[in-house]
Image 1 (cartoon, rainbow, N blue to C red):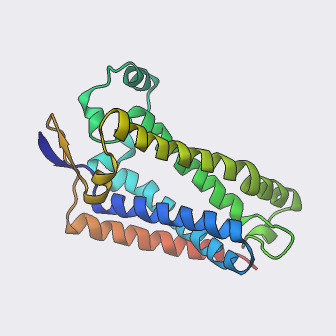
Image 2 (image 1 turned 135 degrees about the vertical axis):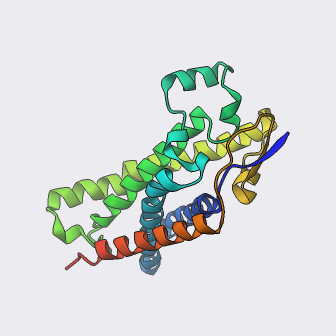
Amino acid sequence: MIKVRIWDLPTRLFHWLLTACVLGLVITGNLGGNVMVWHFLFGYAVLSLLLFRLVWGFLGGHWSRWSQLPLQPSNVLAYCQGRSPSLHLAGHNPLGSWSILLMLVFLGLQVVTGLFSDDEIANSGPLSSLVSSAVVTLATQWHKQWGKLILILLVLMHVLALLWYRWRKQQSLVPAMLHGDKNLPVSVPASRDNFRTRMIALALYGLAVVLVLALVSLAP
């Protein structure tokens, strides 16, 4: 077995920070009331993380790049039939790739609709006054109903998949997202994960935070 750095530190931090923020969003969204202030803050944090991850998918470590997601139908079919190449043991496998992509897309949609939502009681998104009431209504309905439900289902599927891999395939996928390394039967490219790449990631995230703050400041 060969020990290979698969997940760089910025990718790992993104994963766990996003997990914490989503959990915070679920808790504060259900509690309501004064804690909705935290709900908005968690939402802004998620948006900044998603913006960072979008760019990091082009500049990050080898296995964190969008180009390494085996999304083609042929890859998915081969994986389901047990004919998947050993490379899929390194990064995300085809089914995992689709799961991650869908979760990020729907998270982005959930955050964006939150910016334009209005519960007509005490809380409204910072940009809700910039669009028509029809747009606000649609955004609110999606944010509080279908968007919330879809995200919960995607998160549950993600957790169940981790448990299934641990139980049926005797593969624990979580440790690699903690320390970054995997023991693999074949040699694969390692992800860059040094001081320089980490500083680049920090600068990118800082820029993402600035962009989110600028977006929120558009509110009258």
